[in-house]
Length: 91
Image (cartoon, one colour):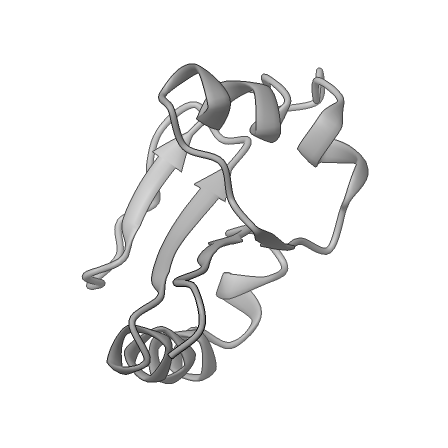
């Protein structure tokens, strides 16, 4: 098997656009040995019935926020890729 991946999925307009799709994706990814997290620019976690860990950056750049926790995704899925590397002052 290849190296395990850490995949970060945005919440608003990404996960929220099709929760069932992303839950199935996460289940399949886990079966293959990969890890999935949700990373949102929100200040507080949305209320979800999910086993996916949710990280809320409060508007901080997502990559910087996760790196401060020692989390470095291999793959990002985000409808607003700029929010991965730049602060989002509109939260």
